[in-house]
Image (cartoon, rainbow, N blue to C red):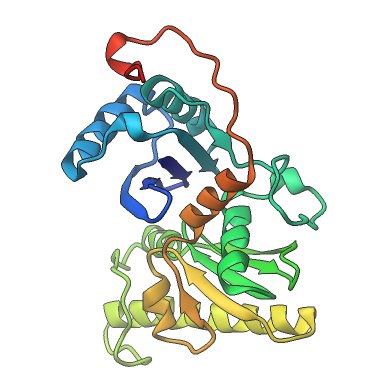
Length: 272
């Protein structure tokens, strides 16, 4: 089985794939100081809850945009699952060209989204990811990554609005019934929701015009279904694109060699 770890700025998502399907997905808040043992104890309880054995994990792939989190996630893979993780970086075999000025600076999540979206939906396409930032990633018909757009994330915008304006409350995100808000909160909700719908439609239209042809548009992230309701630009939503990218990347690359260290007896694999 494969343990896929997607470490973003807000959450770290862990998922297990058995070769046919995803057996479990769990998320925990991203914290730079969270140790490998904290991750391990938390994961063991979740594995037990769904009937998974940690000994069944034979491979691990990690994608992260938080460099400080990588050290303990790598230790988690080595010490708790006895395997060397594959790290999603520009220098691994992606199976496509990365046509940007500085490939090493592209976030792993953006390349993983490009890999999985093209594999599942073909191209050319735009992947819209509603995360801490709202990103638009462009993939051509052959699967090459062409770059994209990075805009402030929705939750980040709501928090900035609340902090910068003393009389504006912190609000939840939802689709308002009317564009014209008749009170402060509905007006803010309208501005956030329809403002981002306008952002999506405007940026996608400009990407298509610059690309010079029609493109599929796929959205991912927790808020993707909510915003897909407000626009016809988004054709599909797929919550597992980044995890699928980690799975596909692991399938494309040989497993890194694990240099066995001294592990507690309880963590050593059972003899065959």
